[in-house]
Length: 148
Image 1 (cartoon, rainbow, N blue to C red):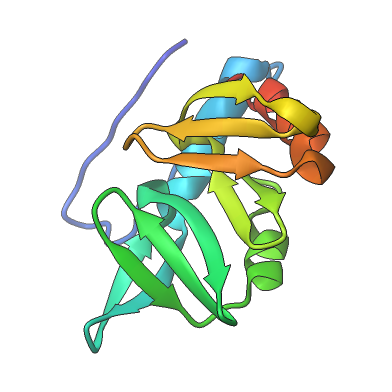
Image 2: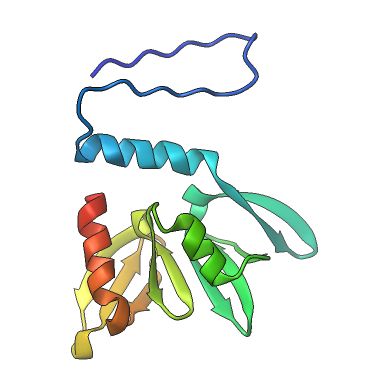
């Protein structure tokens, strides 16, 4: 693989081009990371509005009809509904794991099978989330597809 980086004060936007013969799993993963870099959402915390890069988000959760983005050490309220986030992020590395939660599988440290077909997902920040048995198979497939 060849990597060429060009920098100039003339350019205000970042442009990334990938030229290849075949796209393999490792290249797909790299492209996914590049796509993540370009996406962000808006979240609120303590009356302030913040732009949050998707790569910072561990998971989204809905509690009392409000959607929250959980980062390593902060939680932000989002305006989008969980189903809207799922539609937007479904082709990326985010996967629905329960009725109320969408997980960033790149923040996954380990998984453990529990009773009744459920799965425990341990995240890089030490948090543990339960993957509902209804979502367990699609969760495992997503992990396999993404090479996590």
